[in-house]
Length: 222
Image 1 (cartoon, rainbow, N blue to C red):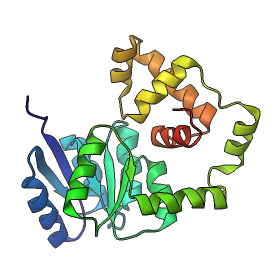
Image 2 (cartoon, helix red, strand yellow):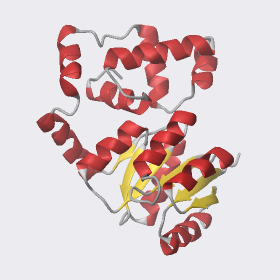
Image 3 (cartoon, rainbow, N blue to C red):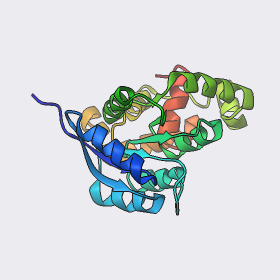
Image 4 (cartoon, rainbow, N blue to C red):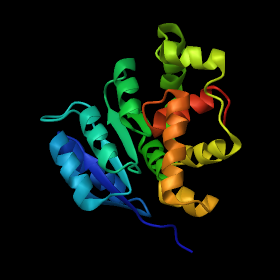
């Protein structure tokens, strides 16, 4: 059976790069660019209209930044799979992008094969940051206490302990599953799953689903 077609939205303010990305991706089997946005506001409206499987998002764009657009999209579409593709290898941008709901962070000098592989991984529900960036990010978390005093306190007093069912839900959240998909797999009502996710975010002091998955991996919960 053929793999499902991955529909892609490119959000990039540089026309030449937008067109180049479309050319490269449309040549790949199983990938199709279904839309392109030239600024952050257009990215939000295009994502809502097209419902793409994967969104490539630049950081620096007119009207709305990539982080702002990512936050707006994931608020409306919690299951959106967004890859930040940028020239900026700055910790603050990475932190903000992940907190906004991005699932991957890549630099624009990435080889085409790695970009394609990341698109497929994110479409499958995986999170990805380039190894060198990820190593520096983890050091920054430790050095700057980015997780915050609340996270440290939770780790000490055990308030982030999850039940077996909450852990099951969190594992599926980390794979990118929607509430409906989790409900179907665990034979639960969708409203029950929503409550579990809310409880998980509270226990982990997580800003969103992506942040919860990141924290859970760092703490060895999943």
